[in-house]
Length: 285
Image (cartoon, rainbow, N blue to C red; front, side, top):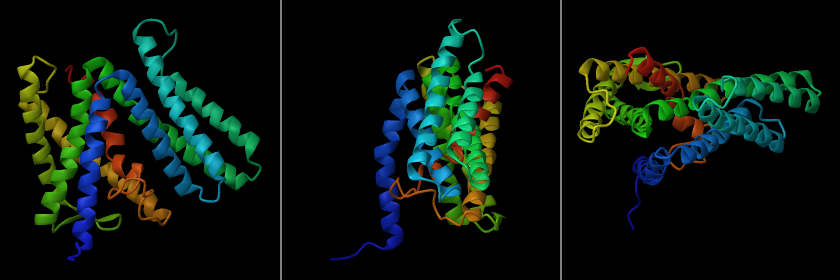
């Protein structure tokens, strides 16, 4: 029996898992309650990976508890946003993250007696609270203010960029962006990814315009968002690469076949989502 080469086998596993997980993620964006559940789950998984990566000696149950708390903070923020926009909540929903930080600090003070261990946990937990929980929760803002279609466009534009950047980088890549942190990333991949994302947004918006939905159809807006996705996604990827090299790990985990960990899968999305919403507001779209 012929054996599939390792490279092609990994690519097949990656594509297969993507075809299964992708539609589930997209459909979860269609309704706010399912989006809440999706984001909460991702925050828990990615936070656990980062806390484990930065605090390998910490008790597993305690790592799980902190990750659970971060996920719940994101979920409560999502519910609070709805209440704020409905005029029910007497304060800004973002204050929920302050409460989340206070709880993490209190638990760290009570639970850990070693100063260095407490410092490492507090640092990684605070970083996860902002970089993972808060940034990814920007999905709620886009969904509430612009609808599920715009939130899905932000998500799938990152997927489009990653795919086109990979293809162009593999085919034409010669000039490295950051050999120190990510030797495989090239300028050719970056520009090819931006071009592919530009085309993808135009096609996506064309079909949305047919149904009279919110679009970015003006070409200057499409170009601005495509360039933003390319630059910000790359920064997000390189940022995670710094952490992985510092902690000497290849992937944040192996939970997603062919993709590594959850944090590996969303490293670019974490930064793109809040900047996407910021640009929608900035351009008065």
